[in-house]
View 1 (cartoon, rainbow, N blue to C red):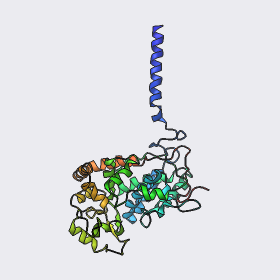
View 2: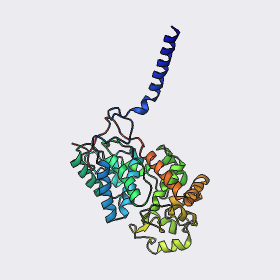
View 3: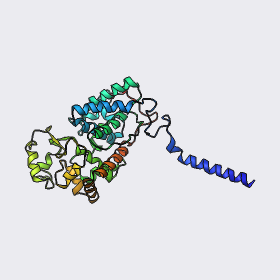
View 4: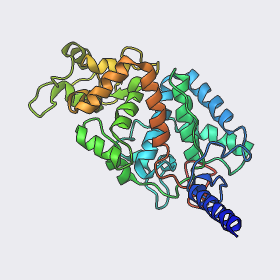
Length: 336
């Protein structure tokens, strides 16, 4: 009898342990709620290969496209989660996020996403979501410009609507205070380490004059330039970013190695040569973030390691999974 009861106890404990770990093992796409690496292994095995080839072609044609595609993923995830809402055009009851302040006249790369989607629809119709395309393209853009790689958990589905108000208010702005930006990150489940690491994406790409003009002429409302901006650098910027006009004039975010994904961004901050106010305040307004800036400036490897971790974390912001949302046939509009 004792042996039987002991065996029963062991079986019960084994069952309990299996139940405890069960939520983490749901790998059937019907279950929902989890992203995982092998999501398209059977349904569309060449999905990532197709995305990479089209992104590579686009970046070879125009290096700036890498930063644009990376930015699209950010601007998607920070609104309603990583659900492809940033890709929707205005139609019927939908007001496109492309019209919001952070996206208007600056969000780009939509045609590259269209080309990827078209190729994937031919390969495996109605299978790969637009939200997943954005996540994979962001990783590939980083790698193609010399940055770190990471495995992208997949299984996001596409939203049925957009939020222009969410786009206007949730995405960190160049002139936000440090606390405002950190709060926007925290509301999405990201912390100060993620904030500093993900800001490092500004090692590639451009910014418009309108995004940093106040630093050159009227940072605090007293008609004076930002004292945390190197004055020689500021004088150079003023030659192409006048007090009025030239709003769309482009400036590289990292003047040292603008086309290379590296830690020059952090080194620039240490010499007062970060372009945006939201960049420089990482060093000047918080001791924890300042310490991280110095660490990443010292070690490219440390920056790469944390950037990859933070990108996976950001890509996991409230995805639609299971039966929620849909797999759009065209990333610009919901299915009929």
